[in-house]
Amino acid sequence: MQQQKIALEFNNVEEVLDFAVKSEENAYSFYTSWSKKLEDKSLVSVFQDLAAEELKHKEFILGVKKGKTLKPSKEKIIDLKISDYVMEAKASTDMDYQDALTLAMQREKEAFKLYTGLAAMSAHEDMKNTFKALAQEEAKHKLRLEIMYDDYIYKEN
Image 1 (cartoon, rainbow, N blue to C red):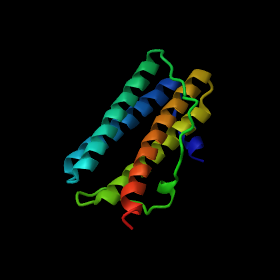
Image 2: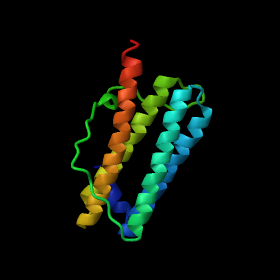
Image 3: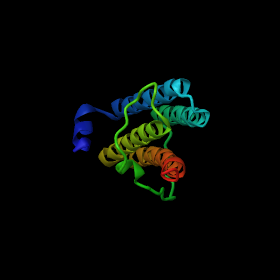
Image 4: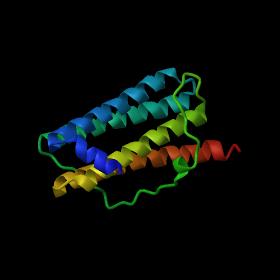
């Protein structure tokens, strides 16, 4: 259903790529902003790392706008599905470690869905592969966060 919504919003590849750039910029801003508000230093570091990764994704997309392509890895990214079972978290200045990880997992899951949807609607194989590669990157972020969640939250309970 979301794919149809996306398909209706874009008239050409340029608009899709511009939207993807904005999405990466928004993700970068989110992680950068929250890395400055969080007290837990290990979580601050994770958010700073994720912000840097989002900037790399933006650069990938800008490269695609100039004619470069990305290829998805043959590596299968494991999905622990933890984000499917945790309660939704809202951003707040007093969010704890669990809420911050939950929020980040949810954001990465949505980014994965976005790129998967864009890949599905892409008519050109190079674009399809580029969006699949970006979806894999988001899946890696989500996996990293889910492992952290499993290590720190589940083991504490």
